[in-house]
Image (tube, rainbow over all chains, first blue to last red; front, side, top):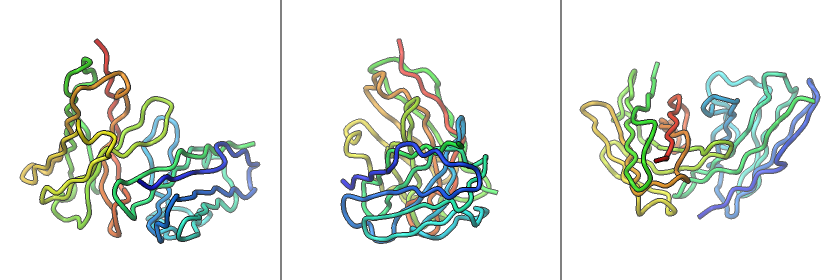
Length: 107
Length: 120
């Protein structure tokens, strides 16, 4: 089973600043990596798939990069509405696995 | 616009079987090349994949739950279902059903989720 490790657990960033979130896989997942955003009381929303492709309707300030075992989600200019928990998920192999999440707070 | 809706009891007794159904509207389960999914989230915790099903009935399950999980599909009613047996308090969670994306088993559309509490 692939283990997905996200860091940091919590990230506090000022509005307008850049937020960088990391996700590491225990084995290569190629580019089969997705990122989700989850706000309190809501279900997850797909942000990125294929490691770097934005999902429909996702603002351009969200970008994904990486391949193999190291991945990054970047929010280029943090907005107040970006306060949420972010999860990565690999879909390279079964079983599907999620990272533990990074909580992004607005400083 | 595709929508998914989970339905089922919100309260299940310990040792009994949790049963949920996901009804898909605005699109066909049979139209996806990938596997529809069930994911859960215990209160205050992260996401856990439970299992996935293809429209023809093929399944994959989380190894940690495999002995207790059954996922089935009913294409005539555009639904897929989850059964989790011998539940305990640790199975208390919000349960989501989700549609796979066009490029693999990531999930691009989710139901609103339904809280299932295991308690006597």
